[in-house]
Length: 182
View 1 (tube, one colour):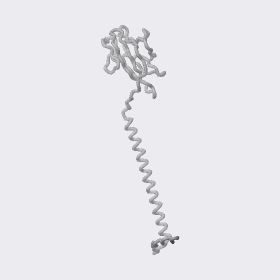
View 2 (view 1 turned 135 degrees about the horizontal axis):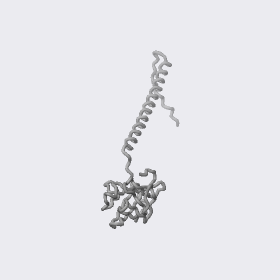
View 3 (view 1 turned 30 degrees about the vertical axis):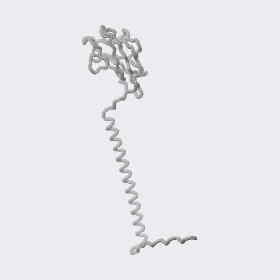
View 4 (view 1 turned 45 degrees about the vertical axis):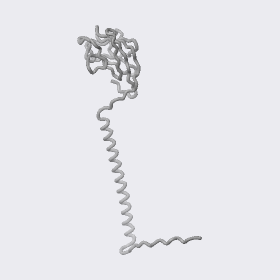
């Protein structure tokens, strides 16, 4: 599967040349085979020819859709040529699953609308952990700043008391009102 950022999912329509049945699938990886996990499951696919996961259509490095054999026993063919590595797929191409297996003709091909991508498990916990660590650092920083202000003020009060000397009492004098003009 291709996890390149910005890669688009593809939509594809395949026609089973033997049955006339259409298959539609979309994604960044489209599996073809007998297995329930496959997005395309050709009906009447003989077990002796078609593997559980026989072939895959994936978004290639160039951004186009490519077919590759998924380690099947009987091989995958594109336009009657064996597929040994990922090969780009075009409209009208014939994908054959094993000699004598079903042939799927590419009838429709294009980028699918952007699909929501499921996040990997643990991503939200990791983000939450970082958020809590940053929050804790900010709380500690704030607590340190409050303590620093407290220490500076109490040092200043102590210094003022020492400067006044023992027994000196400070009384507050009422402020006289400013003279009125006019």
